[in-house]
Length: 163
Image 1 (cartoon, rainbow, N blue to C red):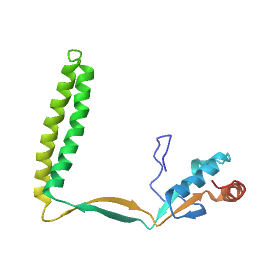
Image 2 (image 1 turned 60 degrees about the horizontal axis):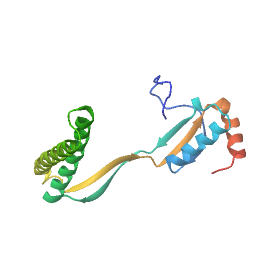
Image 3 (image 1 turned 30 degrees about the horizontal axis):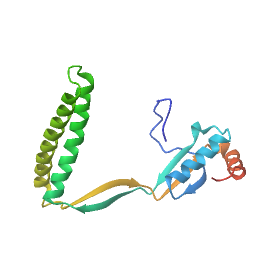
Image 4 (image 1 turned 30 degrees about the vertical axis):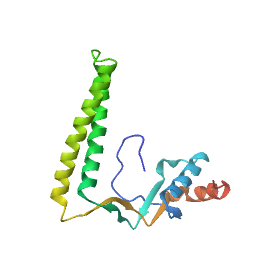
């Protein structure tokens, strides 16, 4: 849960009563939103994820071509960003000159990206021949409120419509 005041609360699991257990984080978030809309003080509400698991989803097989293409794309995007900054903040570059600058920086950084992508693949090639993404997921999410306000929270949730 984000803390708008920027003050770090203690690194302990919040205590209180569970007003609901949900399969997904957006479902738990929707419950907190319903409480907030009902003028409930949500500053002491917590969403607790239980039974955390690391999930790695394989997105494809790695190859020299894919490593080069990925490196080129990464380099090109970085180059495009820097080229746009250069043209925006350099009053001497205008019109066709700015397009030539953008194209040159784009091509050079894409080339550097290809080389770096191939080097990175060469180092990991035998240990890992697939691409993947990782995320931490909880099996369920509990909405916890202070014990002294749990009855009111349950009342508000029972009275407010689900969207």
